[in-house]
Image 1 (cartoon, one colour):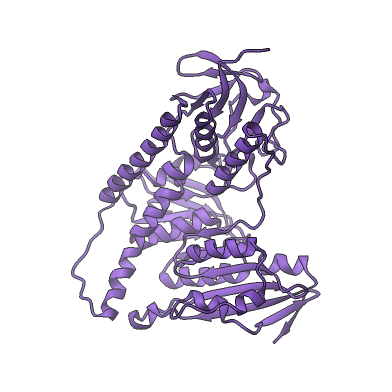
Image 2 (cartoon, rainbow, N blue to C red; image 1 turned 90 degrees about the vertical axis):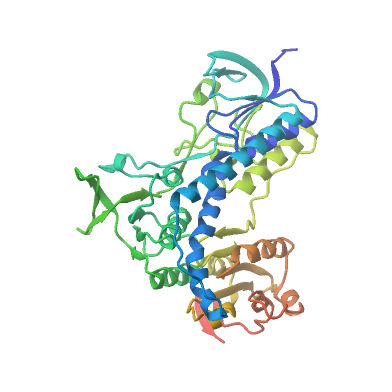
Length: 464
C-alpha cells in the first residue's frame, strides 16, 4: 500500500478549502492546507465581507438626511476614507486570525505558500521548493477578477481587488460592468460622495435577475444621481501626464474620471496550478470540470467553489466542502444541491431573490400567476424619501407552488434568506395566504397579496 505524507492536501485557503481541511483534520486525518496570499479567500479578504462594510459606510449620508424627518438635528459631518480603510483592515485581520486558529485547533498544518501539482499525488511548495505527497487533494483556489487584458489601457484601471485598498477616495469613477459587483460598487462610491458613472454593454443591468428588480434598481440608482450608460463599452483608456484617466467608448463618448474600475466578471483561478501535469480536466474558461460529488476526472482529486465555475457564492463553496467530507470520509455519498439558492445584491436599495425570474418561469410552466406589490416603505413616510419597494411572487398555476420570490428594498437580503427556506420546503401560495402577517412590516406584503396582479399563459400576459 502506497504511503503518503498527508491524507488530504488542500490547495487554497478560502471558504471551501478551509472548511474541508478543518473538518477532515478534526476527524483525525493528517491534513495540510496551502495558501499563497491570506486565509479567508475572496469573500473574507477582498470580497463580500469588506464590501458589506463599505456598503454600511456608504449608507450613512442617507441616514443623516432621513434623521431630520424624525426630529433629529444632525450637525456638520464629514467622511474619512483612510479611517474606513483602517477599520476594515483591522476587522479583516481579525477574521483571518479566526480562520487560522480554527485550522490549528483542528490539527491541520498551515502552509503559507503557493502550491502546484507535479503529478496526481505530488505537490510542490513554491516558497521552499520542496515536494509533498497526498492521498487526496482538494483544489479550492477560487476565482480572480478578469483584467480585460485585450482592452488598450487596461493597466491604468482597477478591479474590485484594488478598490479595497485605494490610498485616496476618488472624486469621480467610471465602472464598467452590469453585474452585481459593478452595481454594488457604483452604489458604494456614490454613497461616499464620488461622482459615479456605470457603463454596460447590455440592454439593462443585472441581466440574470428578474426584470422588475433590474428596472426598479436602475430607476432608483438614476434618481440618486448615478449615471448609467447602457449598450456601450469602453474601447480604450488613456492616462494624462497629470494622472487623469479618459475612456473612449464604442459610441464615441469620452469620459474622464479619477479612477476606472473594470467589473467584467471573474475567472477560475487555475493558471499555473499544474493541472495538466496531474491530468485534471478543465473547460474552455479554465474551470475545473467536476461530477455531482465535486470529483474531477482524476478520482482522488476534488475541486470546490468558484474554481469549478458552478455557482460563485461563498455559502455554496462551504456546502460543497461539507458534502465532500460526507462523501469521502464518512461513507455517505452526498451531492451538493445547487437548486433554489437564495442570493442578495447589496445595492441601494438591495435585492433579495430566490427561484425563477418571471422570464424563466414563463418558459418552464404553461401558466404562471404573478403577484406584485410596489409601495413606499413606512420608514420613508417621515423622511420624505421617494424610494419604492417592489415585492414579487411567481406561482405555478397548476400546483400553486411558489417558484420565484423577488424583493427590491431595505433588508431584502434578510427576507430572501427566510424565503429560501420556504421555497426549498415546497411552499405553496395557499401556505402564504394562511400565514398571519407581522404588522407593521414591509415583509407582510409577502403574505397579503391575495389576488394575482396578472397571469402569463402560453407566453401571453392576461391581466387580473
